Each structure stands twice: as structure tokens, then as C-alpha cells.
Image (cartoon, rainbow, N blue to C red; front, side, top):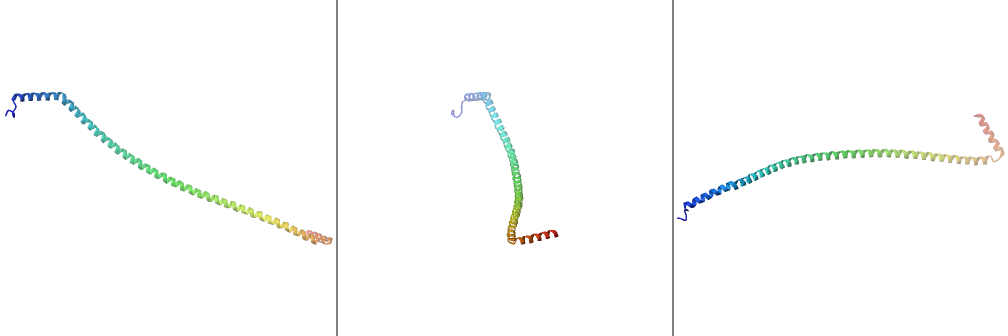
Length: 164
């Protein structure tokens, strides 16, 4: 049974050694270990707080981004609407200007045609008058070839002048 039950001296040495070990560990090891654990706990807690703050900031940034995106879309829509309005206005102005220019061109063309018509009629009148004079001259030469016919014509013209 000696093998199973140690001597009382051995037990005392073991208890004394254990107490010394506990004292040495308590004096030199437990404080640094506990300080390290406390520091580690504080680091983990601050990391968790930082993560929570980062999460809150990300949510705030996402909300801001969503708000900015909505504003940008609204601004884009208003710019497109304004551009369509301006384009429509420019189109209408161009149509109006084109119709004015067309009307002015038509009026100018009518004036040119009228002037050309008057010039042509004047040319025709001048030509008819010239032809009439040529024909009259030829007829008078033929009729007034002798002296007595000339005297008779002159007397008739003088009588007409006196009457008028």
C-alpha cells in the first residue's frame, strides 16, 4: 500500500511547494495575465464599439447617398423636361420663322412677276406703237404720194383743229 498512499512528509513538501508556486504565480504571473486579459477585453469592446459606429455611419451614408441619388434623378428629370420644352420652343420658332421667310419669298416672287409682267406689257405696247407708226407711215406715203392728196389732208386736219 505504500505505493498507493504517499508519506506524510511528501504530502507536506508537495503542499508547501504548491503554496510557494501559487504565491510566485500570484505575485508575478497572475497580475500580468489578468492585465493582458483585461486589456484584450477592452480592445475587443472598443473594436465592437467601433464596428457599431462604423455600421451606423454606413447606414447614415447609405441614407445620404439614397437622398442624393433621388435628388440627382429629380434634377435630371427636370433638366430633360426643360430641354424638351426648349427644343419644342425652338422648333416652333423655326417653323414660324420659316413660314415668315416663305411668305416673304412668295411676296417677293409675286412682285418680281408683276414687275416682269408690266415690263413685258410695256415692251409689247412700245412694239405695237412702233409697228402702228411704221404701218401708218407706209400708208400715208402711199396715199400722199401726190400733191393734191397732201393738200386735202392738211385742210382736213386744220378744219378739225378749229372745231376742237
